Length: 202
Image (cartoon, rainbow, N blue to C red; front, side, top):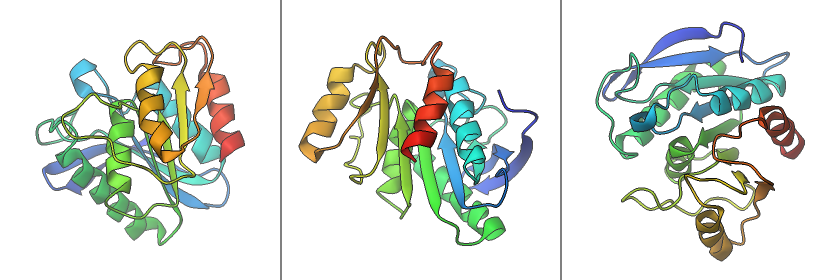
């Protein structure tokens, strides 16, 4: 979906992190690190939902980094079920800030990547958080509470992460959700509306 994003290796705590970089269109107004779905089910930084978010955010002026987290693709290390991956994301954030300076930071992720992004936000400050099909209740580590202005987008008919599970997580936080009617986990046929929703709500 993106035209030839640049590829670079970023030093992470478990070795290199093979990362796609999508530059901001126009003047840079922020940095975004976007996390991929579960690699045990084939998730990588080329996932269409991840790339859709990168395209939408780059059009808003965000310099977007899409790492393959540890053990994925050409990245070093072993998959750590969402624990060590947080350290990987922080390493990418540090690299991005060394390149772009202290621009506003957005963390984003799809499915497992949303779980990782939420856990990263609990460790470091970020100005924006985007969770798409966030994997709530799937891992031994709980999904933390998130800021009230987090953008959470979920499919009504998500067959991997039931909407009811996300509602149960969001309800005690008073956290609003954006629900795509008749939509499954991978947002099939809804990628263009997904991009428009991200830009509208940003």
